[in-house]
Length: 312
Image (cartoon, rainbow, N blue to C red; front, side, top):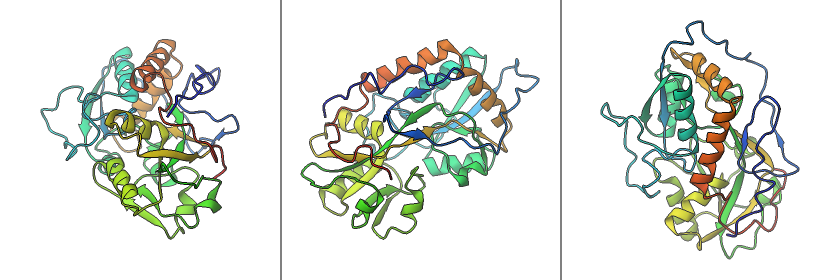
């Protein structure tokens, strides 16, 4: 797909208080409110002492490439966490930024590579301080403290290149078989999906690869995923000729690194992130990593022709 016009998609700052990176921006889109159930985490009194934060991560390139950016996206099995993992077994926009953030404030990170749902469970049980990169929903808010998002993006429907269908709002999905990933949340669509009869769930590893296969075999009509994740996969795998975007939601996805309510250092992690979002040097790291891992493009596929900003 041809690169979009980047001038309106990558503003450097969105407010006077936090230079939050916007990965994909629709002029009419409005970010969902963060909610006020939690006040900002107070900075612990021993904030000057070094802390080792435990972060779980799984493949979600270009944000989090759990086995490194150089590895191709279709892997037979996601490597489980091991005691002898290298200090940084990952790359990606969020990995670069959180690594630089920890170094800036004198802290360390212990990476634990595991399936996404397993990582959520570890945070819920207080065994990890955060999952690196995720959306907010009511269930996760029970055991995570959501404050400020690090990145904003949007999700798009992907289908066969010869499809005549375009996403034009929820009603346009009524007769479609939709592929989604079990354990994920889809802002703007979760309530609709509760009653939709045509959902096909993926779970395990290599979900996008398997969703593409389901499209090719005509077992699903479309699947929904964050657009930069799909773009990265198709660009690195060379499979961009198989599919195209068939419309994107104008509901902005807020991507968080939210501290655990029950882990030893979850609140301290939130305090560090809150400081980082007002740090010009770290905002520059975030932007440089965005350029590095997306080659300066928001998505390398064809621009969605219809339904691009349809309300979900």
